[in-house]
Every structure is written in C-alpha cells, then in structure tokens.
Length: 89
Length: 258
Ligand SMILES: [Fe+2]
Ligand SMILES: [Fe+2]
View 1 (cartoon, chains in turn red, yellow):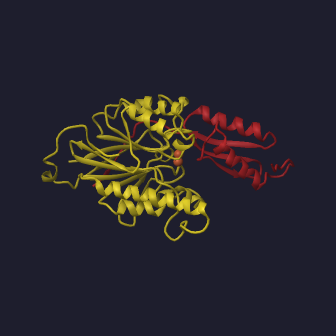
View 2 (cartoon, rainbow over the protein chains, first blue to last red):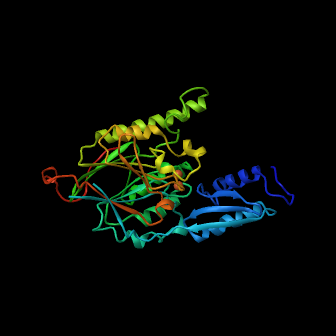
View 3 (tube, each protein chain N blue to C red):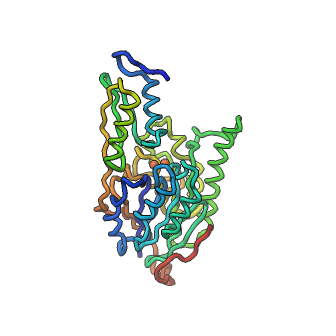
C-alpha cells in the first residue's frame, strides 16, 4: 500500500485508495461520494441516506488514514413529499 | 384522463434509514396509481436489508413495482431479496412487464436492471478478451430483455423502468470517465423500439433529472440524491381521449408476466 506520509498534499494514489474504500468497505458501501484534493486536505462530497452513515464514513477514513487531513461536506438527503408534480402530456 | 406515477431509486435501505420515507409514502394512496422503484433498494443486497425495504415500501395501499440495482446484487442473495420483496407485495421486474388497470387507463411497466457499456461512439465492444465480451454481452442481453418486455405489453401508457441509464443526458454532473459504468445506449434503443411514454432510471447519484432518447422518449433520473425528495410524481397520458379509456375497469394488477 502506498501512502504519502510527508507534510505535502496527499497524492493521487491515496485519493484513489480512499475512493475505493468508500465503495468497497462494507461499513460504507457508497458509490456516490467524491474525493477532491485541495491544498490543505482531501474533501469528501456527496449525499447519504442517514447521519449515521456520514459519521461512519469519516470514522472509517480517519481509522485507515490517520495522517491524512480530511474534511467533509456530506449531506443527508431530504425525504419530504414533493410539492410539485411534473406533467408529461 | 391521467395516469399518475410516483418514482424513486437508490434509497439504499438498511436499518438506519427505516421510517425516514414512510411519512411521505403514506400520502401516496389516492394521489398516485403506482410507485416505481428504480433499483439500489438496499445497501449490500442482503435479505435483512430487503426486509427493511419490505417494511418501508410494503403495505402502502398502492401497487409498488421495482427493479433491482447493482447494490442489490452485491451479496449474491438476489433470490432471497426478490422473495422478501414479493412477500411484501412488491412486484420485481427483470426482463418482464406488468399492466395495471388505473382509473386513467392501463399503465404498462417493463423493467430490467440494465448494465453499463457506454454511449454511442464511445462504448465497449463485443471483442477481445472473454471478460470484455462477457461484459458487453451482459449489456446487450439486458437491453434485449427490456425491448422484448416493452413490446409485449398491451396498454395505454408504457413506462420503461431500469437502474442503469438509457441516455447520457441524465448523467450530466457525473465525471465523463465513468459514463460507461452508468448506462448504455442499447437500453435507449430498447426504449425506442416500443411506444414508450417515459423511461425512469436511477444509479447516477451525481447526475441530473431530465433527458430524452434519440427517438424522443422522455427520460427521468429518479435517484434519491438527484431528486432530493422522497419520490417524484409524474402525470402522464393527457393525450388520451375518452374513447381510448372507456373500457377501463377499476383497480389492481391485471396481467403479470415473468
Ligand atoms: Fe445507487
Ligand atoms: Fe447503482
């Protein structure tokens, strides 16, 4: 396993590894989370079905990559009834 | 006369989600004729997760018709997943169709999970290694089953239900590089091979809502992260005249195939 342990920005392989972890780790199993690299950290974007899943994602990533600064912008998808109907004549 | 459909995909249910959709779902009886589920109903495709789907989407008082998604295949428990859903009264389509007698006419729904493969001019070919050929054959066989099911239905309004996308339009927002994993043009061809009124799909969580097949059929991506509400509602069939719907009788599944 390749890991960038220096102080610089995390490398692309790490990005790929986290991306795969998000799908392949049974505790996460999300295909809809994207990983983007900024100068300071890796940012996780996307939407999940519960607050529990959002916490679990951050916990698993921190556990597996303790040296990598990760911030998240993950939302929990709303489940209200629609207010509009689409008419398709 | 109008046929009213609610639809959502990619609800990825497990115990932590139980009850989140139910309040909105309770509003369905009386306001729609059917609820369509566009696959990825579970997180890992286990029987236990399917029981969560059965609890959340079962016993609603409206017919529920589903296709499975790739997540529902993950644990290789597809027969148990389908069994659990059908026990709860949810119709699961895979290369099959169903016709519902609704107050506004006969609604035909044909469904298949579908598969990736890519879109015209940028798609995988049935050529080379056995793994590649197996991949593309999965694509074409799935699309063929959808086409056959669509053409077999005798109804007033025909809807195609898949998990993978039949067009690239509704993938806008996803990285171009992964389009071949999100859908294939062959599903679009199948949709266009029948007088389809609407094609519904999920799978592309970062995609967009609206698209059209080359044949002019409207396509909607109803993945939950895309629609950001419990379900979307579509009213179809305003073009039907009274004569066309005069023979309609009330309620219930008329003609299941499988
Ligand atoms: Fe999904
Ligand atoms: Fe999916």
